[in-house]
Amino acid sequence: MTTLLLGVQIVLGGVVVGKDAGFICPDWPLCHGMLLPTWTGLVIVEMTHRITALLVAVLVLFITGRVYWKYRDNKTMMVIATLALLSLLIQMVVGGLIVLFKWPGVVTTVDVVNSMVLLSLYVALTTEAYRVTVHRRFGREWPDVELEQMTPTAWMVVGIGGFAVLVGALFRHTGAGEALFGINSYLASHGQHTLPSSSVSVGLLVFHITAGTLVAFAALWLFCRALHLQLYVKAASLLLGLVTVQFILGVLSLTSRLAFTVVTLHFANAGGMIATMTWVATTATLARQRIRQTADRSNSTSVSNPGTVH
Image (cartoon, rainbow, N blue to C red; front, side):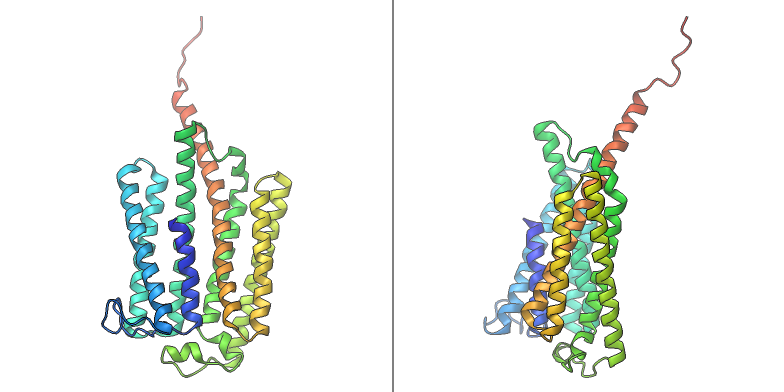
């Protein structure tokens, strides 16, 4: 539930940026000095985003406490939960400081990338929790050890996907995207009235397209390897489909002069891509861990000095 809510929160963040509603409430965590301001216009957008963020924070804190209390013997869950808590704190601090000090738009890149990191961590935590549940309730191991073969490829795809998100966030939050069309609504909402130069804007666009092309090749590579090994075929097919949709939405974003709905869907689809990549990489890594644990148990139970047989 928390993982799904994080996905919703990411989309709401895209809506806030797309509607230039980030500073409709000039203070934080209150809005115009009120806990419950008058819900009209863009205040509705911003307050929905903030309330959802509060709910996410409560759930993350609850899950972290539960992991520390009940699953402290599970090193994987402990590490992921701790990193997720740190990511949440970064998200809260950066988001609050952006509003309070009206930091430049490019700083929101940190907010965007970190939100994808938090989503990825909760995909990983959910996957490990599912593995533990299957083992405890049904007495069998999941995932299958054969999935381990996909680990290097899967993490390579995650790395390229994360890089593409970073480049896309820079393209959006430096104002380069709007500058291509002579628009300055986003930067103006941050108190900035100077657009990036055409050379910078075109350069970042080319960089963005290049990163997207790398993601496409990485997804195709994963798909081909999945077919060859007959592993993760459905997940690899889903990722390839999401990458195709992302390409179409990217083209539509430019041809529509960054229409709000198209750009928001483009951002939301990126979150779906990252979640899918992370799930594949996590299950492959868990399979590798199972192989190593089995090997360690075998080594620990073997007789180091059996003696001489007469």
